[in-house]
Length: 174
Image (cartoon, rainbow, N blue to C red; front, side, top):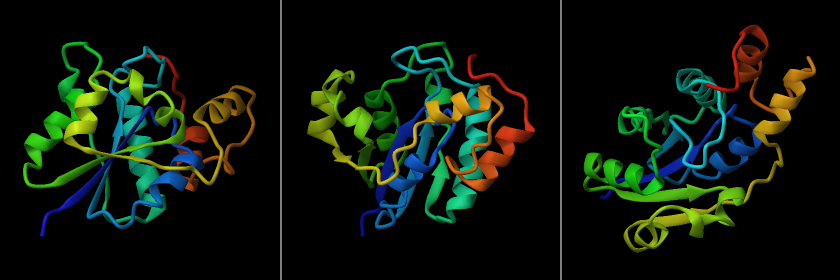
């Protein structure tokens, strides 16, 4: 039987209950790869890659979803400083999981601009793309805004991520 893998890429800057509402709908996949952006293709300012990977690991722990893992492949693909595109990521993942069926999961914000993705037509021709609604409307921006005001974020993310955010000094720009 062919392994079915969902790939959900995001800045995860930081992960939110909105992300969770999408990921929790992916339990029918054998594996769910959460892929933090290494260097955002559209130049978004983010916390360090390692910090965001730590948040994703804590997030996965809280979700208690054994088939979910943090995929750090974008760091390898972007090591020369180039932005990593979805097409580059999916091509590399398909080479690694050569017999798996890959499905690229798109949240509602990126679904509307999917045509702007580099090689979007080739992605659609080669892989499945699954647009997922979120049942909780929480953006990472809401968390960053609250943190900047010294307000709690427990209701916007998972417990372990909220604790890391409140216990650790970090910057949201590399």
